[in-house]
Amino acid sequence: MRHALAAAALACASLASVGAHAALFEDDEARRAILDLRQRVEAMREATNQRLTDENGQLRRSLLDLQSQIEAMRGDLARMTGQNEQLTRTVSDMQQKQTDVDDRLKKSEPSTVAVDGREFTADPKEKAEFDAALGVFRGGQFAQAQTAFAGFVKAHPQSGYNPSALFWLGNAQYATRNYNEAIANFRSMLSLAPDHAKAPEAVLSIANCQIELKDTRAARRTLEDLTKAYPQSEAAQAGRERLARLK
Image (tube, rainbow, N blue to C red; front, top):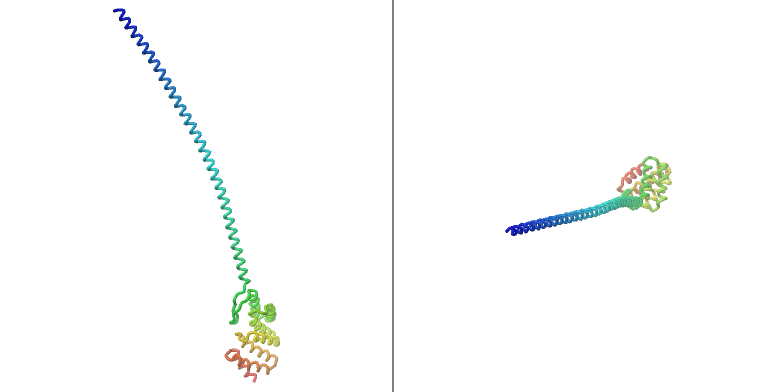
């Protein structure tokens, strides 16, 4: 019995030892598992951190590249804006030059004018010279007007202004008592344009010049011609009155 109890005790002790050893083994395994888990977690954390670092680095590089591209695009846009502004100025300058050319061409191109009821084509220079000469005459500067109209007729022998220019030239000469020259220019005017609005006045002016020259017979013939050629004109009415006084 005693031996049996001892054996049982020994068995229990052995079992306890085995249990203790097993528990110790299980603690070591758990510690190793925990350590392994920690290592794996740490490795994962380091890998994650590295990946995030790499990704952040890549993102920063991408942002820097994008910023560089944006700056380059801004530079291109600025250059394009400058080029567009220059192009706009160039186009504006060209349009202004074209306008100036068109204006100069218009000023130098012949145009239709109307003088004493007659329409014809004249270039701007002709018109300016005729208007200037007429302005001198109307200003009472008859000697200067005589020079101006004589110069005009000589410079523009085919001008549509010539009948009127000859008429005013004759009047300027009459005013300066150049009666024979006046008669010649009035007759040239009548030969050039017998239907001119001032033709009756030109005939009457010839008669006046003849009267001043004391050529009464010639004056009478001229006045008779006036009343026959232009019977309804105011000049013809004045001619009749003048003719009556000559008789």
